Image (cartoon, rainbow, N blue to C red):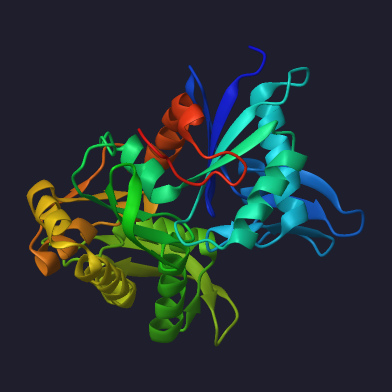
Length: 338
């Protein structure tokens, strides 16, 4: 292990990715922590803790300490960060410089919470970077040039929509409509139409396998298990892509409205650039089938899903480590020059 190495953290609501300078992404784990309520002891973090979701006895709780892109449980977030930083950096090293991404519209209080949690978890110095800027860098866009690029970064807790030029956000909007809300919409739809309750993990599997936001030419089907509300017994049902299109339609409309709102506020010259260069989708939530087609149909602008969309923010956060000297210190939030 090299002393004084720098790390970048994509502090996602659903997944945490850690980038080590010179090595790339070295860790990808769910943002879940299992604790013993009686002793407040951390029992598992990441993948092991995710397996416990919805399956724990009374004295153990598996939870996500991040909600809607920000810290909802400071103490647990600190313990989780300490675990991941220790796992990546080893035991006997100097504290690393750390770059962490945050949603574009977080408050100063929320920024301070992230900085404090990372510092107490073992980081030497903490820099913050806005998620859409990190996503643009990770997608291979040269954000330092004087032309506009539009990024729609859809994570687990938030969707960040931004127009970027000369290394900063010209217009941006953060929506609390993202992967977690898609799962909730699927759970509500199945409960309402089939009188069946399914869990979060099942809803996520449905979203990945047959979820869509634009009608599919060939209908896809999937069998899932849940609990019948009337009888209380476990049952197996079949869900289709057409049903999931209906379930996710409201979320899709809110995303389209968010993109429209940002485009309406964008200066004409940058709008022309976006029309020519297209809209980039990043983040795991952006992989829901048909979202790119829907946005393209509604805006008339070519829409592209970035290569390895899930890792774009982490990659961008890591690449920004090479330009730490170009960041504002202390409350560092954006790149001055790239």
